[in-house]
Length: 375
Figure 1 (tube, one colour):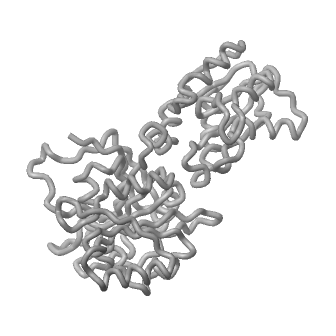
Figure 2 (cartoon, rainbow, N blue to C red; figure 1 turned 60 degrees about the vertical axis):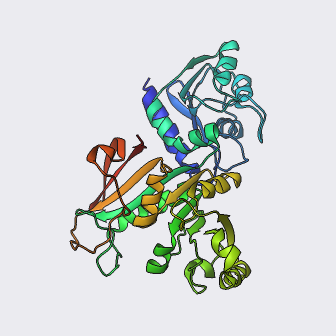
Figure 3 (cartoon, rainbow, N blue to C red; figure 1 turned 90 degrees about the horizontal axis):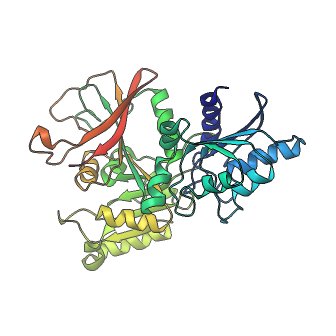
């Protein structure tokens, strides 16, 4: 029996919950008996049945007997009462013979207890089937459940010569349609998308998810002095898409015009995260912004900013992962914009390193992504 095959199928099912289960994990489950798939399920939406119980519901609705069957599940079955009953109980009740598990669950309420309970009831458990793939699927959840802090992805698109815009500031479009569609999936996957005010002024973006039946991420704009135009697409749609503007308390204390504009923005649906200025005396405190977002149960942030915001995110060691979409074209120009500006590092040995980078071709473009290593 090809155990990897069935776990890959479970992984495919799990991804159908992308964007709708946060801050819960994406999980898929497949039930196999006598070499045939008899049941399947995935965690569809936060607060609803887990993957295992959805797989059993699939069988129960069709009067399929699960006794003696194998179950493949991408994450260790839960054994505690939350919004739904423990999945271990359902596995025992349906007389499953063997359970193949991809990832261990770091949630302290589970953390090996689910596997232990199943074994105590005579169920054979085989762990770590396609573990790396299953772990990668839920890298957001793993950080969230352990640290209660958002997983941060730094994303940008650039040319072969490392430019994100021409010297005129124009940037539409660097990559092709396929790569831009992939970014839409990332917006679906992440709970929030963040940009700096420079991106808003230059591109007037919507920052929504344009996938059919998708879910819009919360929008976060870093705008220390409230330069965002009232007529911008972000502000005009703030009642439709949750929108937070991160500003500093400098203006809150001393500038009557900023206070007036803040009130106007509030009336148009914008909400605010107010921080002290960081050490540069001008920018918002990004750590404070992330803490505020974590208090709202936002488990992940996709940063689509320009060079200044990207530089701050790296310098403050906030990014967990980098995604660089690279187009086979060259802009050139001393004044063309680069993805990470600021002062930069002093020596090559001080560079921010990407661990185990992966390269994927998307249409005519390439995506290089990996976890950031900080010295």
